[in-house]
Length: 126
Image (cartoon, rainbow, N blue to C red):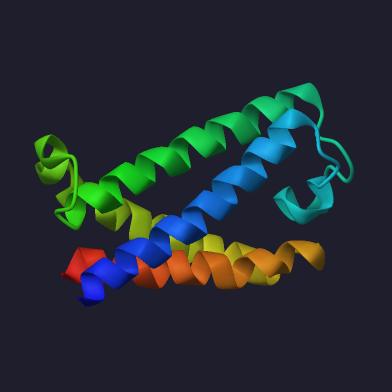
């Protein structure tokens, strides 16, 4: 039950971040809420590509989470056993980075990253 609820919460949080990254990639002027606010307004073309790659990486992490929780993608379950720990470290660092960012607006992502950290840790331990 805890793993299932964690999986759904992780998925919702991650979809929110993916949508945000896709919005940045599409040119919405939300750059102040990402990358320490280094690119306020619209991202330059290179950073739009980075945002697209971020969306793909996060999608891959969702696949790993679903595999680790045993809900989908059984063919990559063995990969998910290691991948989930990579995710735990990634979201722990993401939480810290979002807390210490010089961009006040970017700090809104700290609770999201923390939620992703906690839920991925639950998958890793489960």
